[in-house]
Length: 260
Image 1: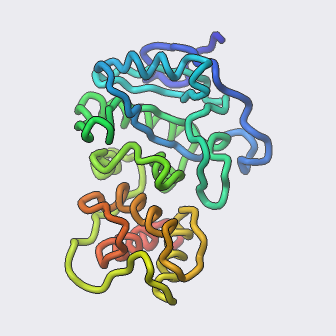
Image 2 (image 1 turned 60 degrees about the vertical axis):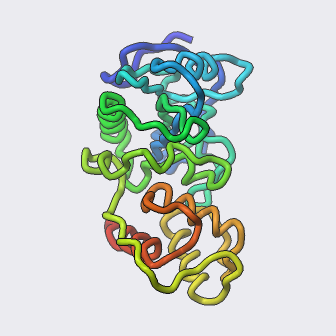
């Protein structure tokens, strides 16, 4: 497939083969993606991500993405933004299971959790910021809809991980962020707890967009959703326990949303 780059940030085009049409009726205007989804490659690889890029471009893998950012800051486009890439998999955001149809996916070369969570180089982060801002501006994507793969698939996916600098990225104009509340002692909720406070926590997570049942029971799904929230918004401690810091950070995020 031959195509022109959608973004001026693109250095190279390397067409992927696994894609389809965005499903009609998923997007409100049936045309423009409204989620920007960030991933890490999660493979032992070289700085150019040669192995990961080859995997994302081969039919056997069944996967693909729109953009690929190397450690040196080079940006590769694999699919036109109008196409539905196979990058999100099974997931849920705001009760919609078809994240692929409504998102643009960026894969960032990084070994991730399997490699001990290496740092993301400065040149790479700068490239991610430039590319993200360009995509956001053209598609008018809301800050709160710049998401981690782990946000839409808690437990199943962990990327881009707790070492990814969401605070810096937000300072560059990409994504929604508030300063996490300080970790301190006090009441907390964890697996096995139940009642109205747990129901209120689940309701707040759901209101932000996370997929979970509002049952009042702090079950396994609630635990992994809390972990996913912490991984993105309170990365200092990712343990699935809803402590005061986690709850306050979630509350501040919701309060800082437009029209809240």
